[in-house]
Image 1: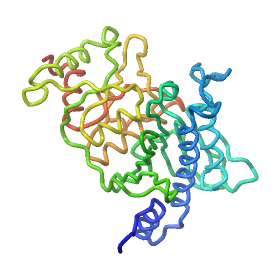
Image 2: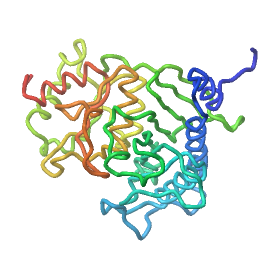
Image 3: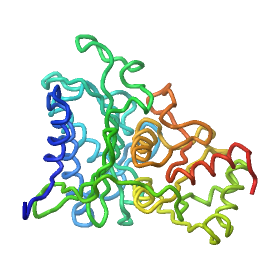
Image 4: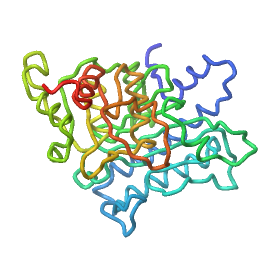
Amino acid sequence: MNGFVMTLNRHLVEQERLYPHATGAFTSLLSDIALAAKVISLHVNKAGLLPILGATDTQNVFGEIQQKLDVFANDAMIRSLAFGGHVCVMASEENEDLIPVPDEYPKGKYICCFDPLDGSSNIDANVSIGTIFSIFRRTTPEDQPVSLEKDVLQPGYSQVCAGYVIYGSSTMLVYTTGAGVYGFTLDPSYGSFILSHPKIKIPSKGKIYSVNEGNFNLWDEGVQNYIRWVKTPEANNGKPMTSRYIGSLVSDFHRNLLKGGIFLYPADKKNKNGKLRLMYEANPLAFIVTQAGGKASDGFNRILDIQPRELHQRTPLIIGSKEDVEIAEEFIQGKRTH
Protein backbone atom coordinates (compact mmCIF):
# COMPACT_ATOMS: atom_id res chain seq x y z
CA MET A 1 0.00 0.00 0.00
CA ASN A 2 1.55 3.31 -1.10
CA GLY A 3 2.17 5.70 1.76
CA PHE A 4 1.67 2.98 4.39
CA VAL A 5 3.86 3.27 7.46
CA MET A 6 4.27 0.72 10.23
CA THR A 7 3.80 2.58 13.49
CA LEU A 8 4.76 1.13 16.85
CA ASN A 9 1.10 0.67 17.76
CA ARG A 10 0.34 -1.13 14.49
CA HIS A 11 3.36 -3.32 14.97
CA LEU A 12 2.33 -4.22 18.53
CA VAL A 13 -1.20 -5.08 17.41
CA GLU A 14 0.19 -7.20 14.57
CA GLN A 15 2.40 -9.10 17.02
CA GLU A 16 -0.48 -9.48 19.45
CA ARG A 17 -2.59 -11.20 16.80
CA LEU A 18 -0.05 -14.04 16.77
CA TYR A 19 -1.30 -14.95 20.25
CA PRO A 20 -5.05 -15.73 20.24
CA HIS A 21 -5.35 -15.45 24.03
CA ALA A 22 -3.68 -12.01 24.26
CA THR A 23 -5.74 -9.45 26.14
CA GLY A 24 -4.11 -6.32 24.75
CA ALA A 25 -2.73 -5.30 28.15
CA PHE A 26 0.88 -5.73 27.09
CA THR A 27 0.33 -3.68 23.92
CA SER A 28 -1.15 -0.90 26.03
CA LEU A 29 1.78 -1.09 28.45
CA LEU A 30 4.29 -0.54 25.66
CA SER A 31 2.16 2.35 24.43
CA ASP A 32 2.36 3.89 27.92
CA ILE A 33 6.16 3.69 27.78
CA ALA A 34 6.19 5.20 24.28
CA LEU A 35 4.03 8.09 25.51
CA ALA A 36 6.46 8.80 28.36
CA ALA A 37 9.33 8.63 25.88
CA LYS A 38 7.68 11.26 23.67
CA VAL A 39 7.25 13.59 26.63
CA ILE A 40 10.85 13.08 27.75
CA SER A 41 12.11 13.53 24.18
CA LEU A 42 10.27 16.83 23.87
CA HIS A 43 11.90 18.20 27.00
CA VAL A 44 15.35 16.82 26.17
CA ASN A 45 15.18 18.60 22.81
CA LYS A 46 14.31 21.87 24.56
CA ALA A 47 17.03 21.48 27.18
CA GLY A 48 18.85 24.59 26.00
CA LEU A 49 15.67 26.68 25.97
CA LEU A 50 13.87 25.68 29.16
CA PRO A 51 15.22 26.00 32.73
CA ILE A 52 15.58 22.24 33.15
CA LEU A 53 19.34 21.83 32.87
CA GLY A 54 21.66 21.43 35.82
CA ALA A 55 21.61 19.66 39.17
CA THR A 56 18.93 19.59 41.85
CA ASP A 57 19.45 19.74 45.61
CA THR A 58 18.69 16.02 45.93
CA GLN A 59 20.59 12.75 45.57
CA ASN A 60 19.45 9.37 44.29
CA VAL A 61 19.78 6.09 46.18
CA PHE A 62 23.46 5.84 45.21
CA GLY A 63 24.34 9.26 46.61
CA GLU A 64 24.64 10.74 43.12
CA ILE A 65 23.44 14.30 42.56
CA GLN A 66 20.24 14.20 40.52
CA GLN A 67 19.88 16.27 37.40
CA LYS A 68 16.65 18.18 36.85
CA LEU A 69 15.90 16.13 33.76
CA ASP A 70 16.53 12.93 35.77
CA VAL A 71 13.71 13.88 38.11
CA PHE A 72 11.43 14.96 35.26
CA ALA A 73 12.00 11.74 33.29
CA ASN A 74 11.44 9.61 36.39
CA ASP A 75 8.13 11.36 37.10
CA ALA A 76 7.07 11.01 33.45
CA MET A 77 7.65 7.24 33.48
CA ILE A 78 5.92 6.74 36.83
CA ARG A 79 2.86 8.80 35.87
CA SER A 80 2.42 7.15 32.48
CA LEU A 81 2.85 3.59 33.79
CA ALA A 82 0.63 4.11 36.84
CA PHE A 83 -2.18 5.75 34.88
CA GLY A 84 -2.16 2.99 32.26
CA GLY A 85 -3.22 0.41 34.84
CA HIS A 86 -1.10 -2.46 33.49
CA VAL A 87 1.62 -2.64 36.16
CA CYS A 88 1.29 -3.83 39.75
CA VAL A 89 4.52 -2.16 40.89
CA MET A 90 7.45 -0.22 39.45
CA ALA A 91 11.16 0.07 40.26
CA SER A 92 13.41 2.94 39.22
CA GLU A 93 17.12 3.50 39.49
CA GLU A 94 16.23 6.86 41.06
CA ASN A 95 14.08 5.42 43.89
CA GLU A 96 15.40 3.45 46.83
CA ASP A 97 12.27 1.32 47.26
CA LEU A 98 9.63 -0.17 45.01
CA ILE A 99 7.15 2.34 43.60
CA PRO A 100 3.53 1.31 44.30
CA VAL A 101 0.66 2.06 41.97
CA PRO A 102 -1.63 4.66 43.61
CA ASP A 103 -4.92 3.25 44.91
CA GLU A 104 -6.98 5.34 42.47
CA TYR A 105 -5.55 3.45 39.50
CA PRO A 106 -6.19 -0.18 38.47
CA LYS A 107 -3.34 -2.63 38.82
CA GLY A 108 -2.12 -5.08 36.21
CA LYS A 109 0.06 -8.18 36.09
CA TYR A 110 3.36 -6.63 34.98
CA ILE A 111 6.39 -5.19 36.76
CA CYS A 112 8.44 -2.49 35.06
CA CYS A 113 12.01 -1.66 36.10
CA PHE A 114 13.60 1.35 34.45
CA ASP A 115 16.48 3.79 34.30
CA PRO A 116 14.57 6.95 33.37
CA LEU A 117 17.52 8.88 31.95
CA ASP A 118 20.76 6.99 31.41
CA GLY A 119 23.80 9.17 30.79
CA SER A 120 22.26 12.22 32.41
CA SER A 121 25.69 13.58 33.41
CA ASN A 122 26.13 14.29 29.67
CA ILE A 123 22.96 16.39 29.35
CA ASP A 124 24.66 19.76 29.59
CA ALA A 125 27.10 18.74 26.83
CA ASN A 126 24.27 17.82 24.41
CA VAL A 127 25.40 14.17 24.24
CA SER A 128 22.87 11.44 23.42
CA ILE A 129 21.13 9.98 26.48
CA GLY A 130 18.36 7.43 26.91
CA THR A 131 15.69 5.57 28.85
CA ILE A 132 16.10 1.84 29.54
CA PHE A 133 13.23 -0.44 30.62
CA SER A 134 12.65 -4.05 31.60
CA ILE A 135 9.31 -5.83 32.02
CA PHE A 136 8.49 -8.96 34.01
CA ARG A 137 5.21 -10.77 34.58
CA ARG A 138 4.29 -11.19 38.24
CA THR A 139 4.39 -14.77 39.51
CA THR A 140 2.27 -14.47 42.66
CA PRO A 141 -1.56 -14.45 42.68
CA GLU A 142 -2.98 -11.03 41.84
CA ASP A 143 -5.07 -10.96 45.04
CA GLN A 144 -1.90 -11.07 47.16
CA PRO A 145 0.67 -8.31 47.86
CA VAL A 146 3.48 -8.03 45.33
CA SER A 147 6.57 -9.94 46.49
CA LEU A 148 9.98 -8.29 46.04
CA GLU A 149 11.75 -11.67 46.00
CA LYS A 150 9.30 -13.63 43.83
CA ASP A 151 7.88 -10.97 41.50
CA VAL A 152 10.57 -8.32 41.08
CA LEU A 153 13.92 -10.01 41.68
CA GLN A 154 13.60 -12.39 38.75
CA PRO A 155 16.61 -13.39 36.63
CA GLY A 156 16.98 -11.67 33.28
CA TYR A 157 15.87 -14.68 31.25
CA SER A 158 12.38 -14.21 32.75
CA GLN A 159 11.91 -10.82 31.11
CA VAL A 160 8.91 -10.64 28.80
CA CYS A 161 10.13 -7.42 27.21
CA ALA A 162 13.11 -5.09 27.31
CA GLY A 163 13.96 -1.94 25.46
CA TYR A 164 15.48 1.48 25.41
CA VAL A 165 14.83 4.90 23.95
CA ILE A 166 17.76 6.96 22.71
CA TYR A 167 17.42 10.73 22.49
CA GLY A 168 19.95 11.78 19.87
CA SER A 169 19.88 13.30 16.40
CA SER A 170 16.57 11.49 16.27
CA THR A 171 14.58 9.76 18.98
CA MET A 172 14.53 5.99 18.57
CA LEU A 173 12.82 3.22 20.54
CA VAL A 174 14.31 -0.29 20.36
CA TYR A 175 12.60 -3.27 21.98
CA THR A 176 12.30 -7.05 22.03
CA THR A 177 9.76 -9.48 23.43
CA GLY A 178 11.96 -12.48 22.67
CA ALA A 179 11.01 -12.66 19.00
CA GLY A 180 13.59 -10.40 17.41
CA VAL A 181 14.72 -6.82 17.96
CA TYR A 182 12.89 -3.92 16.35
CA GLY A 183 13.76 -0.23 16.15
CA PHE A 184 11.29 2.63 15.72
CA THR A 185 12.19 6.24 14.98
CA LEU A 186 9.98 9.06 16.22
CA ASP A 187 8.62 10.97 13.23
CA PRO A 188 7.59 14.50 14.30
CA SER A 189 5.28 14.86 11.31
CA TYR A 190 3.24 11.82 12.38
CA GLY A 191 3.85 12.18 16.10
CA SER A 192 4.42 8.43 16.11
CA PHE A 193 7.27 5.94 16.35
CA ILE A 194 7.75 4.48 12.84
CA LEU A 195 9.40 1.11 12.16
CA SER A 196 12.83 1.97 10.76
CA HIS A 197 15.02 -0.97 11.82
CA PRO A 198 13.21 -4.33 11.48
CA LYS A 199 14.83 -7.46 12.93
CA ILE A 200 18.11 -5.90 14.04
CA LYS A 201 21.09 -8.28 14.05
CA ILE A 202 24.46 -7.41 15.58
CA PRO A 203 27.51 -8.53 13.57
CA SER A 204 29.15 -11.60 15.12
CA LYS A 205 32.50 -9.77 15.24
CA GLY A 206 32.95 -6.03 15.46
CA LYS A 207 35.72 -3.47 14.97
CA ILE A 208 34.86 -1.18 17.91
CA TYR A 209 35.68 -1.44 21.59
CA SER A 210 34.09 0.89 24.15
CA VAL A 211 35.62 1.23 27.62
CA ASN A 212 36.77 3.97 29.98
CA GLU A 213 40.53 3.50 29.68
CA GLY A 214 41.07 6.03 32.44
CA ASN A 215 40.35 3.11 34.81
CA PHE A 216 43.09 0.93 33.30
CA ASN A 217 45.26 0.82 36.43
CA LEU A 218 42.23 -0.19 38.54
CA TRP A 219 41.41 -3.28 36.48
CA ASP A 220 42.42 -6.89 37.03
CA GLU A 221 45.26 -8.19 34.89
CA GLY A 222 42.89 -10.13 32.64
CA VAL A 223 41.00 -7.00 31.59
CA GLN A 224 44.27 -5.11 31.09
CA ASN A 225 45.59 -7.91 28.87
CA TYR A 226 42.41 -7.83 26.77
CA ILE A 227 42.63 -4.07 26.22
CA ARG A 228 46.29 -4.43 25.25
CA TRP A 229 45.26 -7.16 22.80
CA VAL A 230 42.50 -5.15 21.07
CA LYS A 231 45.17 -2.62 20.11
CA THR A 232 47.21 -5.24 18.24
CA PRO A 233 46.87 -6.14 14.54
CA GLU A 234 45.63 -9.62 15.52
CA ALA A 235 42.44 -8.17 16.98
CA ASN A 236 40.79 -7.20 13.72
CA ASN A 237 42.01 -8.97 10.60
CA GLY A 238 45.41 -7.33 10.62
CA LYS A 239 44.30 -4.06 12.20
CA PRO A 240 43.75 -2.93 15.79
CA MET A 241 40.18 -2.43 16.93
CA THR A 242 38.90 1.16 17.02
CA SER A 243 38.27 2.89 20.35
CA ARG A 244 34.90 4.64 20.61
CA TYR A 245 33.70 5.64 24.06
CA ILE A 246 30.90 8.17 24.58
CA GLY A 247 30.37 7.52 28.28
CA SER A 248 26.61 7.20 27.84
CA LEU A 249 25.72 3.48 28.06
CA VAL A 250 22.69 3.67 25.77
CA SER A 251 24.66 5.55 23.12
CA ASP A 252 27.67 3.22 23.17
CA PHE A 253 25.41 0.16 23.19
CA HIS A 254 23.18 1.44 20.37
CA ARG A 255 26.13 2.15 18.07
CA ASN A 256 27.67 -1.26 18.73
CA LEU A 257 24.31 -3.01 18.26
CA LEU A 258 24.04 -1.59 14.75
CA LYS A 259 27.71 -1.70 13.73
CA GLY A 260 29.19 -4.47 15.87
CA GLY A 261 31.65 -4.21 18.72
CA ILE A 262 32.01 -4.60 22.46
CA PHE A 263 31.26 -2.44 25.49
CA LEU A 264 32.99 -3.14 28.79
CA TYR A 265 32.41 -1.82 32.29
CA PRO A 266 34.38 -4.39 34.31
CA ALA A 267 34.83 -4.63 38.05
CA ASP A 268 37.79 -2.69 39.41
CA LYS A 269 39.56 -1.93 42.68
CA LYS A 270 36.99 0.76 43.55
CA ASN A 271 33.92 -1.14 42.34
CA LYS A 272 34.59 -4.79 43.13
CA ASN A 273 31.04 -5.81 42.14
CA GLY A 274 30.97 -3.61 39.07
CA LYS A 275 29.18 -0.29 38.74
CA LEU A 276 26.25 -0.77 36.38
CA ARG A 277 22.86 -1.80 37.75
CA LEU A 278 21.67 -5.33 37.00
CA MET A 279 17.92 -4.67 37.04
CA TYR A 280 17.87 -1.32 35.23
CA GLU A 281 20.76 -1.50 32.76
CA ALA A 282 22.47 -4.88 32.38
CA ASN A 283 19.41 -7.16 32.25
CA PRO A 284 17.39 -5.27 29.62
CA LEU A 285 20.38 -4.62 27.34
CA ALA A 286 21.48 -8.26 27.74
CA PHE A 287 18.04 -9.46 26.62
CA ILE A 288 18.16 -7.17 23.60
CA VAL A 289 21.69 -8.08 22.50
CA THR A 290 21.01 -11.81 22.93
CA GLN A 291 17.92 -11.56 20.74
CA ALA A 292 20.05 -9.73 18.16
CA GLY A 293 22.59 -12.56 18.12
CA GLY A 294 25.11 -11.05 20.52
CA LYS A 295 26.14 -11.87 24.07
CA ALA A 296 26.25 -10.28 27.53
CA SER A 297 28.46 -11.48 30.39
CA ASP A 298 29.92 -10.41 33.71
CA GLY A 299 33.17 -12.00 32.57
CA PHE A 300 32.30 -15.44 33.91
CA ASN A 301 28.51 -15.88 33.68
CA ARG A 302 25.69 -14.92 31.36
CA ILE A 303 24.05 -11.72 32.63
CA LEU A 304 20.60 -13.24 31.99
CA ASP A 305 21.36 -16.15 34.35
CA ILE A 306 22.25 -14.01 37.38
CA GLN A 307 19.75 -14.36 40.24
CA PRO A 308 19.23 -10.85 41.66
CA ARG A 309 19.56 -10.50 45.44
CA GLU A 310 18.93 -6.77 45.75
CA LEU A 311 16.85 -4.19 43.91
CA HIS A 312 19.86 -2.00 43.17
CA GLN A 313 22.42 -4.77 42.67
CA ARG A 314 25.46 -3.91 40.60
CA THR A 315 27.32 -6.08 38.12
CA PRO A 316 30.30 -6.00 35.76
CA LEU A 317 29.11 -5.85 32.15
CA ILE A 318 30.78 -7.08 28.96
CA ILE A 319 28.28 -6.84 26.11
CA GLY A 320 28.19 -6.78 22.33
CA SER A 321 29.15 -8.97 19.39
CA LYS A 322 29.28 -12.65 20.36
CA GLU A 323 32.86 -13.37 19.26
CA ASP A 324 34.18 -10.21 20.90
CA VAL A 325 32.54 -10.99 24.23
CA GLU A 326 33.80 -14.58 24.17
CA ILE A 327 37.37 -13.41 23.50
CA ALA A 328 37.12 -10.91 26.37
CA GLU A 329 35.87 -13.70 28.66
CA GLU A 330 38.91 -15.81 27.79
CA PHE A 331 41.21 -12.99 28.90
CA ILE A 332 39.22 -12.21 32.05
CA GLN A 333 39.15 -15.89 33.04
CA GLY A 334 42.90 -16.19 32.47
CA LYS A 335 42.60 -18.65 29.60
CA ARG A 336 44.78 -16.43 27.42
CA THR A 337 47.12 -13.53 27.99
CA HIS A 338 47.81 -12.34 24.45
